[in-house]
Length: 198
Image (tube, rainbow, N blue to C red; front, side, top):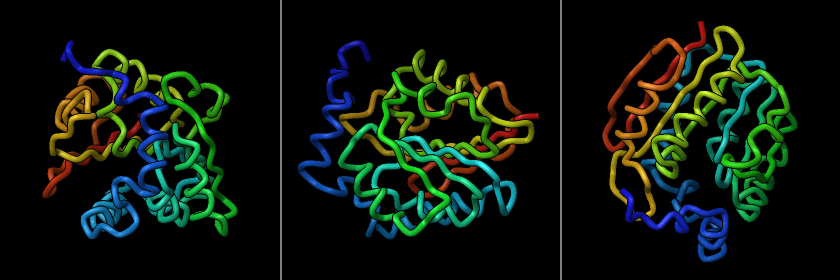
């Protein structure tokens, strides 16, 4: 792990990916992604959430689906190009706000003391080391209301730009989140866990 080149997970690296391909993970068209989104939505603990947060929203495909379940939804991404695509995707969804920001540096700027009923932590944990991820998810847990839900979904494959494997991400979350574990499922290709703040 010490030999990993962290420049491949920098904000500039993500921006370059979106310059080369406007949807680098094929979130818009992939049947696998559509199926994963549906499982994510079906796994939520309740039908409606007043105030939700989706960090690392990419091009906004899951964002658009989550919007139907949320009174208000804040989504962020580190790439300005991804944010522009997500804003275009969600332009007609007036309960959605999408901003550019780096979870490593800008989290407090975006949440600004807000409390959420739902945090969707999808396809982002791999880009942190264990220590940074543990600190981040504790900060996110602090932003949950009582009975708020934290749901995490990650691919279980291997990629050269991942600091952690998806299973390592979820082991870290299980060990570090000060929340009650509600659900843990292994699906073909991905893992899903959710927690409630009691």
